[in-house]
Length: 157
Length: 157
DNA sequence: TTCCGTGCAAATCTTTTGCACGGTC
DNA sequence: GACCGTGCAAAAGATTTGCACGGAA
Image 1: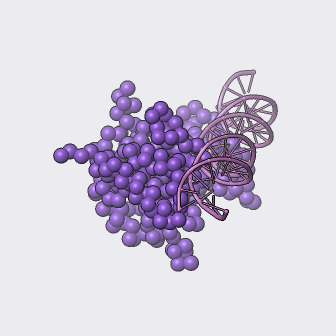
Image 2 (image 1 turned 90 degrees about the vertical axis):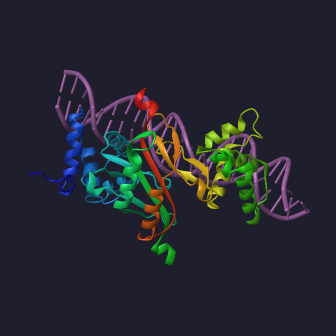
């Protein structure tokens, strides 16, 4: 049986497990801070900033507190391993989210007024990107698409 | 006649003139630092960082030196007026470039190894974005697309 | 036991701000 | 003459780094 990577990733903690295994295979030791961060990211639907991650892990009920330095170090490590990707929103702080294969692949809508970040997907867009990627003078490894504007609350309110 | 795309857009400072006029109409006084910055941006084919702008204006032969604080203030002012847009490359510093109507609308290729930033255009991509923009829960005012990867020099070398 | 992951505090780096002067209107 | 644009220096804010300790292998 061949569980799709999405199913694999969406089942409780599977992405976190895969990520930890990948890092272990690359010679990293396991650690409590990283494990807590991985599990937090695994539960997110969209991108968080380093500060949001720190706060979430400091909140009551969180498995453990993780220092800000570790949050940045772990995110950097995960980014290099392509387990996490950064999302640039034009705001002061960079956002980070886990990378899943295919199914969870999405892009972002950013409200420039309130800072809200939402995910969206579009097959036509992905096709256009794929087509294009083979024509540019760059071996494309990733793409990032951000639509800026005003969210409903900001537009109406 | 073979006008380069750059000449086409900025036939001798047209964008700079338009930008200055727009700001003047909005009640801003003219100033030497801003004029120098506008003319520099008008000559660029792609995005520059604040530091690159400062350096370019400090170089021999530049019309005048502009302090870093002014570079940031002027860029911020131009961004609010939608005369300039920021380009997020995943690098430490944000890049900025002038906004032209239609013809020069482009997106960016970023080499994650050497930091090279190149422009590209793709009509199919723009169509996909336009179609999509009417379906998302955001009144879209801008979009930014960045392809990350390795440029030819970095891949081959 | 060895070495790496982590916390804390200090450092670094980009971007912003306070203040005073000079130019534009 | 009134005010805004600009330079300089200091401040602010995000991210990184140095160092020492405790846990993983």
